[in-house]
Length: 171
Image (cartoon, rainbow, N blue to C red):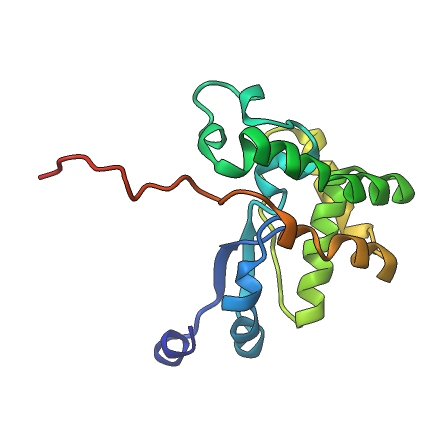
């Protein structure tokens, strides 16, 4: 990022960032903060899993790409569903939804790094948009943050299916 930024200033970097996916913190957050590059996190709600809207990929429609994501299937989904308990507990304490806690975490985590952030949760309904915006008014306590901190390290299953054994003839 530093090399590219030296050639032409980068305004924003889009990467997955959530309580379930934090690898961007190791790979890019430091440089982005140093360079004043905003982070635009996609899937800040863990592809919807952090909302509690579904507990297993089998609940999703047949064409939904999340049905193939290892962390949402079988034993991994069951293990990951247990990780939502602290999110629910914190949500109840704040009179909020789990989605709002997940979004508030992204905002506060960005602040720790001095990083401008514009999360982009997928939103189809006005009520969800209003819920997401309301998350900006939530301030998580140090105790809340301590409960949320270990979640990503306990997630079971990869973000994407292994495609290394998949091949198709292409010309």
